[in-house]
Image (cartoon, one colour):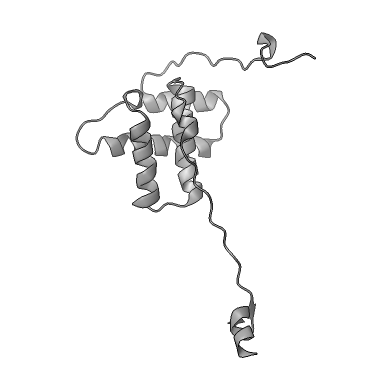
Amino acid sequence: MYSYINDPKHSKPSAPPLVATRLLDQVRERLRYMHYSLQTEKSYVYWIKFFVRWHGRLGTMRHPREMGQMEVEAFLTMLATERRVSTSTHRQALSALLYLYKEVIRQDLPWLQEIGRPVPTKRLGAIFIGGQTVPGLISRI
């Protein structure tokens, strides 16, 4: 049986080197090369900028290349606990950071795959009959 996994003909082509020198311009350049939508580009740039500025809030701005697992986890924890963002917003921020480290900075960080993804909460719908919910009607019977 023939396997395409290790075949160089069928491997993912590497992206050309980045021309831009600034981080956010590099992110935009790579997103456009990969044909991501404009809205995805805007949201990824927003989350990456927020990530860098949040860690620079104490006076020292650092490049994401100098940051690691602790900084990414602290940022995502802040979003979940202090900002109380929704699951989809949390996943979007995580996806932006994953893209930054994998595609732009090109750092192979195994801990990025181990970062926990939030689980959406299950919501039960309420059935209204004549202005009352079903449990309210059942209690009257």
